[in-house]
Amino acid sequence: MANVVVVYHSGYGHTQRLAQAVAEGAGAPLVAIDAEGNLPEGAWDRLAQADAIVFGAPTYMGGPSWQFKKFADASSKPWFGGAWKDKMFAGFTNSASMNGDKFSTLSYFFTLAMQHGGVWVGNGMMPANSKAAQRNDVNYLGTFSGAVSQSPADASVQEMLPGDLETGRQFGQRVAAAAARWKK
Ligand SMILES: Cc1cc2nc3c(=O)[nH]c(=O)nc-3n(C[C@H](O)[C@H](O)[C@H](O)COP(=O)(O)O)c2cc1C
Image (cartoon, rainbow, N blue to C red; front, side, top):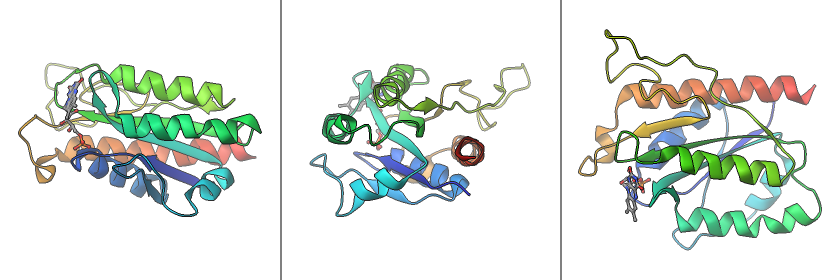
């Protein structure tokens, strides 16, 4: 079993719900970045010990929230010593539009992982893109580079779609399995 940690920020709870699904699939603890962009006590040590780190943030103005970016900038401290080198990384995001430039957020996570000398893992899923496909199918949004979910701008956290959450759960399983292989 690999030691996977999910570190995320969520402004209004939607990304948190996706984070919970990813963490459930990965059998991983959640580390929440708070509203000031800070981690709880002991979290940096947990990240240092992880085999795989999964990044999560809402897509705000085409990228991760500033709180996530503050965390990313603070990760320059472990970067100096190469503390995250050769870890596995993955990422997820939620936004309101079907597209909404979510890929920019995943791309930022990927770049951060590469800066740390890590290895990136995508979702390994087929997209649900046939005529028969339904919005609640797994990977209906058709992303390969991570896990994404979409919640309309006026939708509550409770209204997040089970199919998107299942996508997150299966993505978490994929990351945990990949990290276990990578660890050997
Ligand atoms: C400041 C701000 C910027 C946003 N920018 C985008 C965006 O670029 N694309 C998009 O699809 N949705 C955008 N949204 C909608 C959020 O992505 C959406 O509300 C998301 O569910 C919020 O996740 P959270 O509840 O974890 O904070 C934005 C929302 C806010 C508050």
